Image (cartoon, rainbow, N blue to C red; front, top):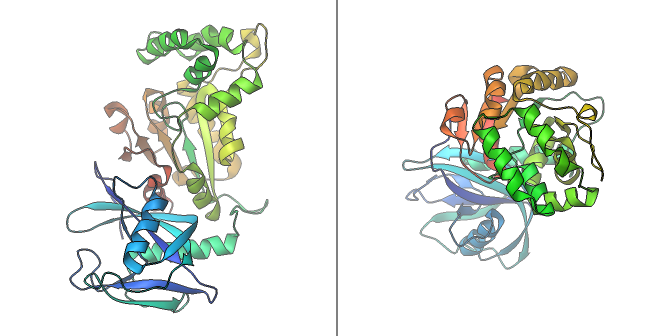
Length: 366
């Protein structure tokens, strides 16, 4: 199924590939009169509702309603973008296991049958979402529970994230660090001056050194843990590892903060401004400032080092600091961005759930 981009407001759904000890998969046959996928076998699941705390909660609720069973969601598998006659959908697939209950057809008006099928002998008429989930399950089994690749295996692709405003929606690393120290007002003024073009990266860095001089490693850890971040980052990284896709953060912000994405979310690479973290004065001569205009060069260097062609690199950003990068890398996703950057991107998406990026990345790196 082709992917041409995201609608302004795609709907979300979720389902689970339930696999038993005999390596059989539990599928439902959608009624020919069903609103979606009539006459096709599919994994159980349905639409997310406002009352669902998480996609996993929605999957458990839907499967209880459809089959009368309680399941345990074991892990994220993939996300699929598809359309029906009314909406565009992003469907999340998880690996599940029955915990309680006897499987039965609870909604006969929606489903004509329910059955177990060997995973290597599935019906031909399964829907697109279930087919993607099965492929993702096979990748998971091939690459092990933690995914990844051996040291001599080449990268099959690369995703490069901006940090401020992108991985940290609505905020920046420096603002979060300032909040820990009670210096939020100073940084807010710097942010305003930078965003309006009154100061450049170098001037911004020189004025924030006094803040950095007061930081400890504990401050940085506290600021990172408190900062709002994209949800589902570990699910996205798990998906990339099964496909030998590296994930990097490239930022004009401090690398000592960006490195926390490597520590907590298993990112593979971190590139950012180099500043020491210790109590006491910091000389500008001991720092390496990352400039907006320098992002493409650093991204190119990382691609070269990994042996990844530029055409197999996807860049994700949100603001004018990413304009130069988007100008050099065609495979770009403007995430929660302003209109100026959205107009330069291959794809535009507004979401706080990182796995929503998977359909676009899959299409580019197919």
